[in-house]
Image (cartoon, rainbow, N blue to C red):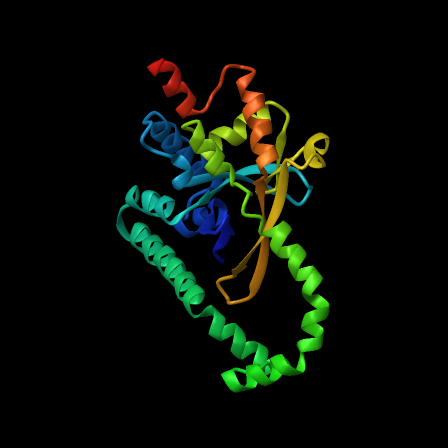
Length: 255
């Protein structure tokens, strides 16, 4: 069992949580659905901060629903439990999340030591400087690719769906559902992706996010972000139905 990474935060799959607390996954899904329903009745609460809707594929390739539980979500489930099982679950998830925090904090040195062991990468400043001098020609060769990465993959104009949703006073979950309802994006595994009709219009872009598994193994996750053109597309799309950002709504009221 290991922690997963979802848009930069550590989460646990509800299937793993069900095993940890000795409950059938279907029963845990039912309980979480009730928790979300109760939270969503309060505008000051965001159930996505606790339970993130997701899917998984069975052996037959069919998609089934599951949830990704944040640390808050695990705490919420633990508070609903009493006795030995509740104590054991609390100890397990606290250990997992603390282990991930320690891995992230100590990760760079651990990776450096592993690279030195396997590839002879230097671990001292002097060794690094010598290696840099020896590899200067290769660095120059890679410069065009680095420039492209900086200008395209790390474009400061990119926005997360959470940032765009806040303009409307919505959560990321609400905006994603609205765009899905309108045939703009769909869920593929654990992530939202644009339909082919909109994929090549420059509305979205994938930004790589480096992370580490709980065992220290590095990985890369591609986050879907929206360009300024994409943000304008969403604005025009919603405006057709009279849905405007909160600031524009306030201006109309003042007028």
